[in-house]
Amino acid sequence: MDPTFLAGLEEKLKNADSVLDILSEAFEKGTSEVVRVLLGAALIMRASDIHIEPTEEHTQIRFRMDGLLHDIVLISPAQYQGLLSRIKLLSALKLNITNRAQDGRFTIAGEQLMEIRVSSLPSEYGESLVLRVLNPKNILSLQQLGLRADLLAIFRKEITKPNGMIVVTGPTGSGKTTTLYAFLREINHPEIKIITIEDPIEYHLEGISQTQVHPEKGYTFASGLRAIVRQDPDAILVGEIRDAETADIALQAALTGHLVLSTLHTNDAAGTITRLISLGAKPVNIAPALNLVVAQRLVRKVCEACASHTQISKEELALVKRELDHLGAGIKPEVGSTMKLARAKGCKKCANSGYKGRVGLFEAIVMDDELKELVLESPSITQLKKKAVERGMITLRQDGLLLVLRGVTTMEEIERVTAE
Image (tube, rainbow, N blue to C red; front, side, top):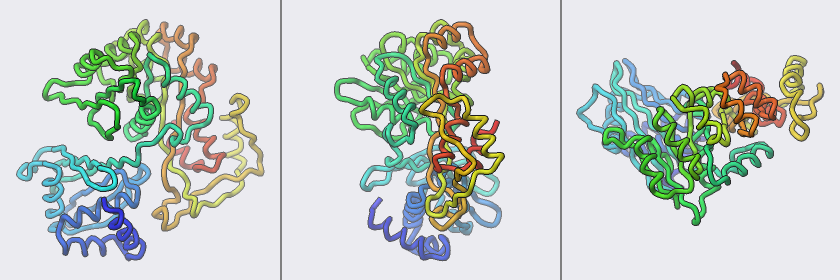
């Protein structure tokens, strides 16, 4: 998207009474301009998704910013119809189909090509649209993930191993893809071959062979992975392990000289083993194949423009000491009753939320000999987590509290994301 247009739009957004004023002006120029303004506003406001939701009297447009939805503007039914038709046309969705879900995508030209993924869903008052904004600027390096120094060292060590499996876990929207792409960027060199199989390809990485599953044509994660292994790769990224066949082929690839990166949906790192076993994988294969398990969440960073800092309360101090007391030397912070914590306030720069931007919380299990021995016994999640903590794992909650003590985020945000 044209930087000059974005700069002008940003100035308009600062001075306008509402986004509706800017959109009304755009509607006079045509729906193409409306789409351009909406996408430009999403980029300026760092939104990951645009939600267009028709109701009986109007259509609501909301942006997902830093993981939470924010109301942006209401438009009329007539304006909605024009916008709907334009977006469906751009994303190659069938205009005459309104009673079933459709998926499409389109590309925006600019400094870098940017993909917009579109999902339409029939609802009571029309089709609900969600536009996922896949901004190439979201592809981060390992250094940019905001990792603790000890965790950065662990990640760098594990991704340079010639074989074995690294699994990143967490719910949808927790940043797993961002972490995996950071791993790929770190190991991407001309002398090694990297192949990915994804659903769908979210970002295009130069120097890497990327493929996309097409289940309707028989090209699934399992069949694709089986073909990839015959392509003589050094490293393989499997977008997600969803079934027994994919799990088995991925583990075998890790055991036969390939570095395999993938994701699973589990609540924490310890749940990965149980999940793989429930998919049908054998502990005798999991134990030697698995090198590293990473669980992650995203928390909002406190807005630097408006954050206040107040003294830690007695309750907060007791919580921090209880949670962080057993951490090892070099990681355990100095905690006292005089220290101050960041508090969210809210200003125009952060849309009055008190937060701007996000950062990851991580917990990592490095599969050493003791843990591999335990995996062979098909342990429960509780057993594995206890042993991992004994071996030095810092939990998601502890990592979050360390961020609070550094002034990156707030206690309330850590409670929101990590409370059990």
